Every structure is written in C-alpha cells, then in structure tokens.
Image 1 (tube, rainbow, N blue to C red):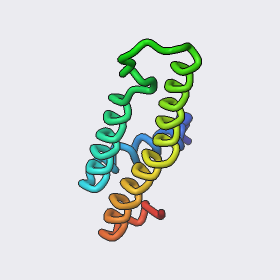
Image 2: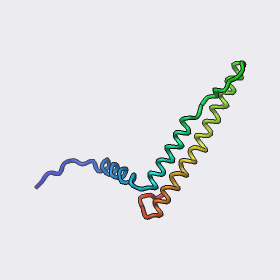
Image 3: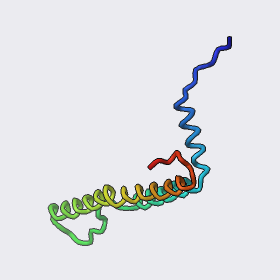
Image 4: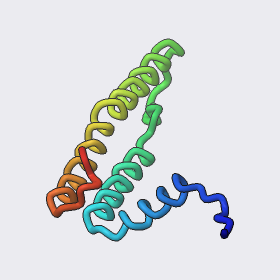
Length: 104
C-alpha cells in the first residue's frame, strides 16, 4: 500500500485552467482589450482640475460633485458594459471554436 500525499485539487485545477486559457488568442485578446479599458479609466480625473477662475466654495463643491457623479456613472454603466462586451465577444469566439469551457 502506498500513501498518497494531500492534494489541493481546486487550487491545482485553477492554476491549470489559468495557464491553459492564456494559450488561446481569444483570451489573450480579451485580456489586452480589458487592460486598455483599465488604463483609459486610470488616466481619467475623478475631480475637475480645470478650475480657471476664483469661485465660492459652494460653486466649487458643486462642480466637483458633478465631476464625481459623471465619473461614477461612466464606471457603473459605460465602462462595465464595455468589459462585459469584450468578455462575451472574445469568449464567444473561443466557444465557437469548440472551447466548451466558456459557457456564457
């Protein structure tokens, strides 16, 4: 009788999947497009830095609040939908090629 060492199947399988998936063009393309979208968001200003005149504190707060609200809306709606579309498109192409692991 031989003793089989403890094996964390979930961890090993997850590592295997991640390493295997990065060999497909569709997955690499999705990662590149997602990285581009993330870089675009990182370059955005949360606050409005274009204050060119003196103003009252309330007016300044209103401008900054508006800028924050617009950025928040962009992240929750536009950016999130772009990421979903990137994933659906690229993983859908992978699934069409017969990679059944991508059930969207």
